[in-house]
Image (cartoon, rainbow, N blue to C red; front, side, top):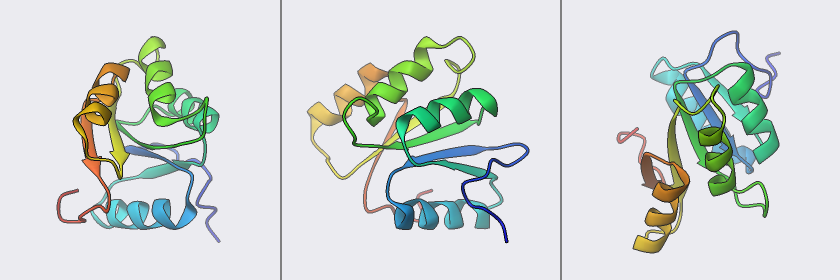
Length: 120
């Protein structure tokens, strides 16, 4: 049986999400479209996996203080090995302040939940 948390030999998308049911859905949709995915359940794991196997895109949806999406985005942007990655912030908040904070932290894209699979 495949361990969903085990890194793939190469990766297109890193999904950093604390809720297993959410990353399972996102991963299924992306893999159905042909993308290779890795998953990280917290901020430190997301940074480590991005350094280990740099993806093309990082989906960030983390809320734990100190390893939230914005902190992870800043860490990835500060590291020469990962600063080039495309970062997308997922959030259930749609206000301008949340979008601005994501952009200031280094997120290039912003999507609100619930996600529309056709938009991905």
